[in-house]
Length: 241
Image (cartoon, rainbow, N blue to C red; front, side, top):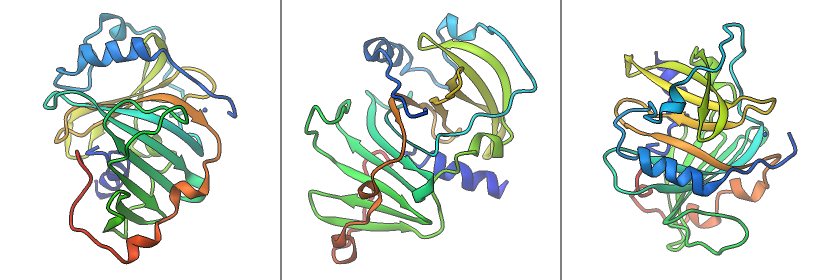
């Protein structure tokens, strides 16, 4: 149980893929999110999403790519609107970063105001506030998400669904905080199997959706701790954390 909690702590810290680029129709996705933002669990009310297209009990659980970045949409029934986050991940560098913004984020087309970042480096977590040039050291014992976390949580394959207009695999797992609460994870049903939606635990209702995912090694600069983190310390966390 403790190991499962540790895995999910990294996966859900927002409470929270090949050399090619995969993009999705954002307008369709935003309508889907808007229609489901009041939903009080991880299940989708869209009728198409409840259709089992195929099942295969011998499938191996999907892994995250070793390196990728995505725009994340954190949705919850107890919050108005969507929390937008830019996510960078590179397992080979043992780095993971979440940048919090006020709106949907695309790069490099716009210069968006960055509220704060949550940075995982090796086994350390930092809250970083660029405008203040200040930081908070959050933990020294939690690593980035293991790319095999779905397998490590003993997820069960439950067929494919039409999810956000995309053929997706549905994997279900017990919530370490409440075994009666089943969490849903969606990945593209293709050779890449990149993430589409990650589950939240029962004490943080909602889900995190992935958009505009780019697969490949990430720049080391995303995972560097700024020098000012060692000189100016604040006692606060990122918004919505």
